[in-house]
Image (cartoon, rainbow, N blue to C red; front, side, top):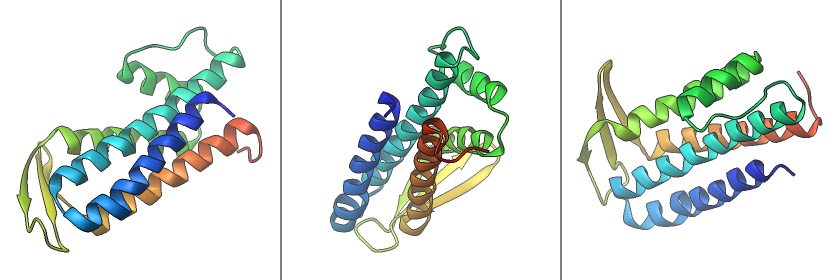
Length: 153
């Protein structure tokens, strides 16, 4: 198994604990931000895994260190729609995580982080973060299948 896929799965284990244990009992925006960090890290590991695969197949000569360059290179190397989707989703999560935010209804079921971004206001609550979590799990599985050759597009 690709080392980066293993790291992505490790990030998902940490995310799993944050979502099902920490967020369940604390219900704070800080836990939501930590969860976003873990989801972003898992997506980054998927991108690294794809670049390593491309390097091993001699589709690219070297892997850049800069995340923006990695995203551009992986989109150029793999024109599949799901690759563009994972990179765009990861950049979206990064924008949410870096944006100015407010907290609402902490310590309640409907804890909400409201991120104020250039193109509008985005609210993140437990239900939305669960959707993001499930989406990242799908991305990691899809990347693993693609690299291992179990399922090719």
